[in-house]
Length: 106
Image (cartoon, rainbow, N blue to C red; front, side):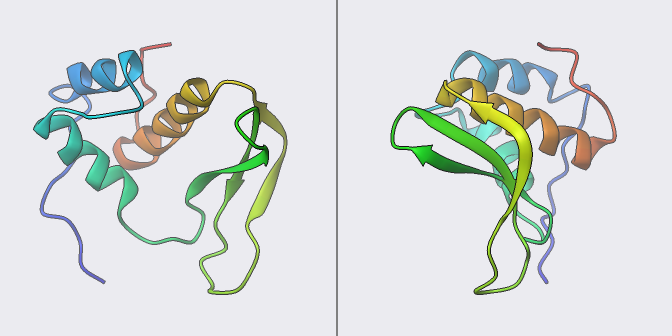
């Protein structure tokens, strides 16, 4: 597996987390894109994803099995009716996994 040479620094990259919070969908700065590439890269097993349960209206949190052809694992009782809120939730979860720190942005 190839690992990124980039790392997410929980202090230096905190303004980029705020940038994502303010605009989670659409074009991002080059520095935020670097952070997103790290957070979205890596092993698939256990990676948080969204499953659309009602098109354009409802999403459920899930994790990938890491095995081709195997279904995702739905996380019970975690649903979103706002895609931006859902994207932010996943960003926060991945940030914590990669940095070991909870984002101080709510």
